[in-house]
Image (cartoon, rainbow, N blue to C red; front, side, top):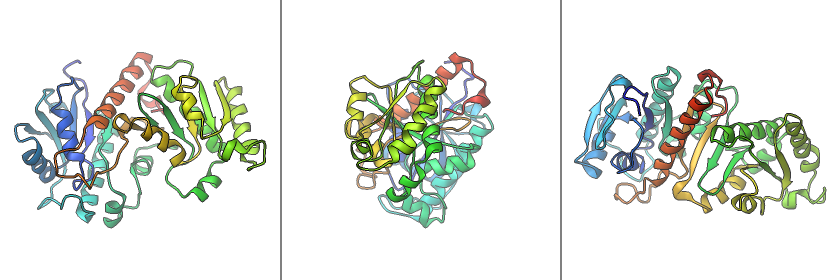
Length: 342
């Protein structure tokens, strides 16, 4: 790694959860990581250091270029400073507020080109709501503040990859939102994301919406009227895509190597198999941003917060994934402003 390479920003997540703990564990890991910069509340990070990693050194910076690339050093850019640390394992207004501020600061740094990518530790939907933050999750925040016209969610682990057609909405609304345009966007996002992950000609499978992928119209006509036309449209653009495949078997076929990525129609259809096949190594990637954003594929862990037993495995996988995407992007020599796929 070159000495002046821009750092990867890591937002602290909800301070009442395991975010600060797993960040410190990741940064103190024996693995050689890229240069990293924590974005978060000063009181929260100082508290986490005292409880979990008292031997680590805190390096507070105002300029990301002043980060120190060394194991045992926590580079921090301060996005807020609470008077006292929120209670652990609880839904707290202050926790939602400072978690949101850290995200906004990281987005600002990324948009200004001060950091190479953003990795986000978990946040809590109730805490955000309690703090009157009008967003349920990271994806929606990054969509609005990140300068993207359209975004999609990709989940991946060592076994499988999936892109979602619809994300955080009711199942009833997902059926309505999974229209032709949404199908086409998800397929194209899946294609471009795979290329950025080093798969030059990805094989994409599209899951059906209904049981048995509609069984030729017996269990619904969305496959025939919406999904198949979208697949044919993508094929006309040279994308290697097939389906619709029954949702209960397509992920097993992907795990066996038949497909490189699966386009899932709704949240649980895509997330259940990814988490079942490797929660510890799961990574969430927001596609469509002008910069790279990844995150662990798990929540705030309120039930184990403050106990010192949280695993940093998924966060480490998220940092590795962000770095891999950066390396692939530079290898492909694509202009920075062009990367709508990652």
